[in-house]
Length: 459
Ligand SMILES: [Zn+2]
Image 1: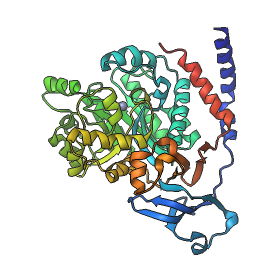
Image 2: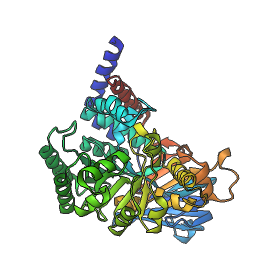
Image 3: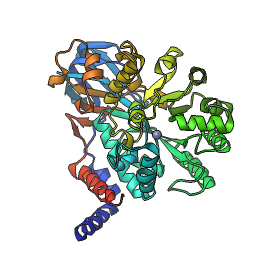
Image 4: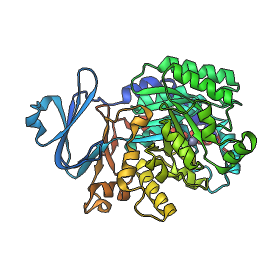
């Protein structure tokens, strides 16, 4: 106990100078162009593949990132070696950054706290009771850990929903990821505010304060139709419309919530949200496990974005399977989410691609569905959360499980995992190279230490 208290005091002392320490701990990040030479493979946003190619990442005067793929770019683009960061692309595959469109990042703190439990017991005995203990400082450290994890796995943008959103936004900026940070609204309150009016005000102030940020986008997240009233959804959409921001919500995750709504309101959840004018191109809904073909059509017609979270759905035994085949037939905009780490238990989007493919093949008794191009497209769909995908990650092909290469996309979807990500370049900045973060070890160790201390308070 004495040792634990000592660690706590030391950690608190180190927190005092945290901002200064983190800002100075980020090693110098070059703003010059990056040339990746002699790449063994490259995959672009349209999933075209190239062999033995160069890739140039250049920041233009207007701040936009321009990516050029071609042979001998050094000569062709008339590049000067001294303004360039050159990376050797041999045995590497370049591809667009991955995106995680439904998560609750600070839940990294609850990784592995309990598994294999009935949903209701799990929520009541393990999740809600421990979430109620989280301070805003805890959320900050959980967010730093989550951002590091995503960076390690080549995720360059994400869409989050968790209380103390300002801490999540701060951590996201410090690590350098792109994120849509959604301020959660629940009628009976969150650990941030116990009262709905305060939450709605908090959300509007949060969006107002950060709306002009470039790499992070503040947004609003009414939690779900079973925790938010009609009025709450309408007010949230008013705020989202006023600031032209995303509305992020859970929908039809369990059969129970759908049956409850049908019994109480005689309507299904998608129709319910559609009648309230919540569904449009600025809305992203997570799960959609228990939806009908008509609901799938409504989501597509309204251009609502869908975040598919297969691992979480399977682990929590949500029972149904999102009708991916029908949604794709109607041309729905679908991306992949990990959901919170407590129900996954990681944020590896490469792993999600494979799991998505396997789930739908097994479910439909059809190996042709959820093919590799389909799931790859879903894994890089950052446009669905408002970010152009101009990030590049390199996959290290120098591992036995990635050889030989008959089809590079097959190796990436079905053989690779997040640990094969070698280098991550976000907005023209290298944040991980040769599997090493650009942060000093003391910055990373401080995060791990604080997370270890926070975990002591959980039951
Ligand atoms: Zn969720």
